[in-house]
Amino acid sequence: MIPVEVRQLSTRRLLFQQQQNEENTRVKLETIEEVHEMEKISEEATKLRVARRYNTNVQPRRLQEDWVRDAGEGPMVLMSLRVEFGPMG
Image (cartoon, rainbow, N blue to C red; front, side, top):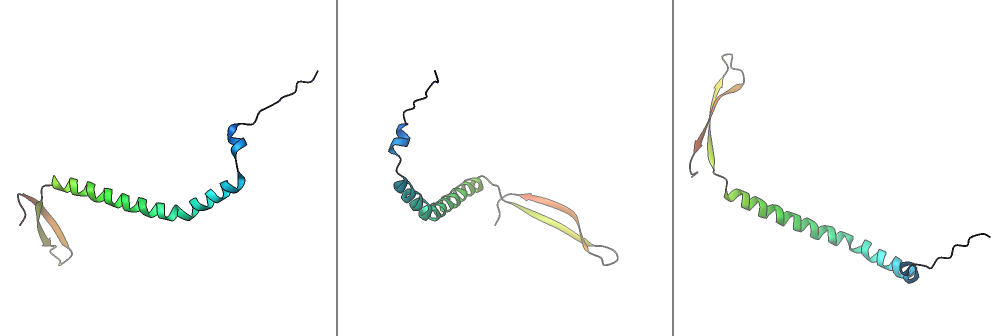
């Protein structure tokens, strides 16, 4: 005796409609650019919010640089760098 395998189709396969599937795929492909644009806008807005929040805690500082020329009139060389704390203005 040879065993016979009988299968019942799944609900997914029973309800599948090729034409409807192709139409839905076409619609998704047409709207994908819109979705990408909306995501870019959302990403930029999030970056701005994060930057604004970060910058509220940053304490401004001024740098004072002392530059000198090499004896042979060569390039300027940074000799020291001091940081001044306090309000900028």
